[in-house]
Image: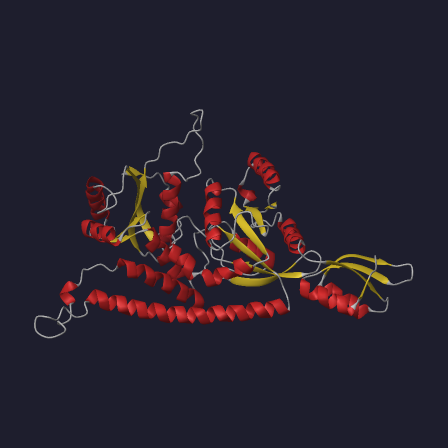
Length: 459
């Protein structure tokens, strides 16, 4: 196994630092060897896939996110996947010796293991084995705070456990059913477990359906206000929660770790011309995000589906920012949101981490990218670019909203105040006959109300 070079003192959490160590863990990155891609002229082209080292760093960060004390991490290069153990017998034996020497109780595998592979590896290593899906589920189980979040995580976990049930409890079969020799064995332990899990899944799905209906009612009440929704999406640890706090002055947990926050949070924000919007902070995405989690969190992610503006927050200081972009786009596509959706505004965050050359390069890239989608450069940490982002949100919200030219009596202060509160006032002037002319932009509901309340200017 190729050793991973890392600075032990830079570990995010350890027993000495936090006192909350979950266990000693070995992290394995079993990656298939890939051939370099070449164009028609035979010249190597850069791959959009992450390097094995970057993938190992990410899974190690995930392991530390649940306070595992990572005592060793390394890459295993594979020519093919073995059906029984995923990796070859020689590497399995080598890792078994490593696990025993380091007294590790957990081995994290950065891949999706079948139930049989997981069972075989646990027997070979005499340790608990977590694959990528199991590890992410463990993190989600720790991070969920609200009742809805706990239910969503439990649903995903049960669906995962259902696929992990293998026939290893045949000694617990109940007595035979039927009469004489004709009756087969009664309900086995595995069948009992499946039944219990299926019943619990049904109850959770029923509860989540109620949550979905409550969300629909809340959405309807917001539509009566109405405040448009701008939803933050992005790769985990891209800085969404820090940006959310910057724009809303809220105190959502922000930390330099993967999946620091899971539960959605909504707050009102003030836009430059006096109107308001609701900003929604959602769960972060990650490469190979388990499909069961996407399905479980679909009720939460409906805020993204219904949003009028989708703010895709990217960490442009990260070496894998392009690969992270594609991962987020894949999750959005699973929700029915295409990469060219006009609602999307790309927010390139963490520019404070770039040097002068990096800033120039990113600025040039953003100008070219802006021909397809708006791109805003920000630093959620320092606040740089926050005003430009608010302006971009307001501009995007106003693209599909009608513009009205209204005329009010000079004494109608209440009417002018109503327009300032409920519409975006673009221009205000005095007419030759001493009346007030106002050009406003409003959503459909307030535009209809304005037409009934005020005189629409002719011509």
